[in-house]
Image 1 (cartoon, helix red, strand yellow):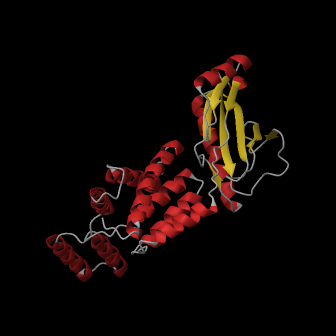
Image 2 (cartoon, helix red, strand yellow):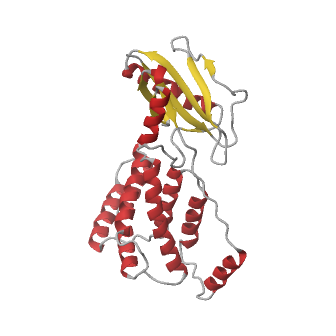
Image 3 (cartoon, helix red, strand yellow):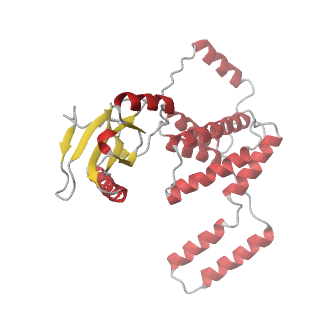
Length: 314
């Protein structure tokens, strides 16, 4: 039994590899097998070329995966040195083939069909491997002028209220609508809700204890930079956490009839945990999951912003 690996990635906007019009057999290092490079996705509005690199002839899955990871790491380093970026995860959820469709292709062509997976993918029997993909989905909307003007006139009547944090929150929401990457869109929507939060001070007795501890730190023999760092950390504890502030705010908004999602607080808490996992531990959910969660977050932030701009209080 033999194994192969496939490395799938996409170049940033406006970047292509000149002259790569067919399959190219390339060599990267004397200790690596011959590699096959080809374009599998044309440059478009959503990004540059999509590329596919394959190597065969490995005797074990472990060997194939190790070499694939090594080549991938080198690719990332090379792109940084040349001053551009590549993506190793799909920017938006793509279409997918049903198992029935894949079985028909497999039977007709006598191959083993795999989904189009970004990053390193290891598979058995390279000589019969085939990959199926659909293009990324796009949606275009056209709105009549009179409809736009009527909505604008209607919005003027209550006298919009630009409360603290609203412009920043709206700006983050708006940028999420421009963003193609499902990961970036999700993070922007989480931050849009964060921008509306105003964490309150903790109980007076807790604040007093923290102030006393900060005083001890200030009088200690630690270096000044360490004193400042420790005092700042304790100072942050004098206010409620983002999670606590968000739950209180969103529960009030639901009680006030502002939100249509009853468990909005739970939605945000889960999303905030995912955001922390992405930013601090490098754990990124599937783009389809991020897109679904972004849909919920978008509903929440839109309803919150409408309520604040209409002068309603949560």
